[in-house]
Amino acid sequence: MDIFEYFKSLRRSIQQNHAIGFLQDPVMQAFDDHRGLFRARVFFWDGSCLTVDEIVDTQAGYPDILSYSYTYVRDNKHLFRSL
Image (cartoon, rainbow, N blue to C red; front, top):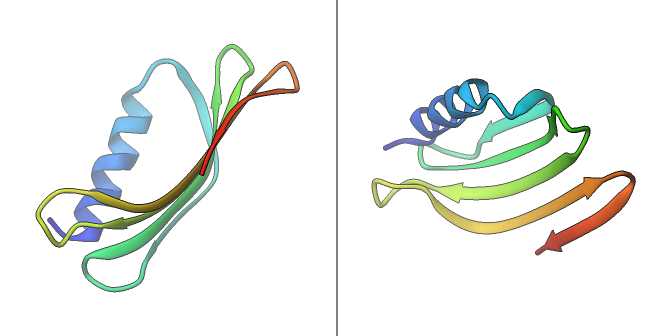
């Protein structure tokens, strides 16, 4: 799997998820054929928001998350942050 296939699959999965209202400012930047950055804010129908930053490597044939940061906010309160 190359990084472009991963980005395509990720975008399709997000679009098909009925809990997601919309995706804001998505960045899908390839560093080379197998490594890249995914960054976006995912807004859910309940008004909550998940901010995602991932550096991904697909050289092994599957997505390997090399580094990540996730922040989930609901009602203007940070519910969790993972680095």
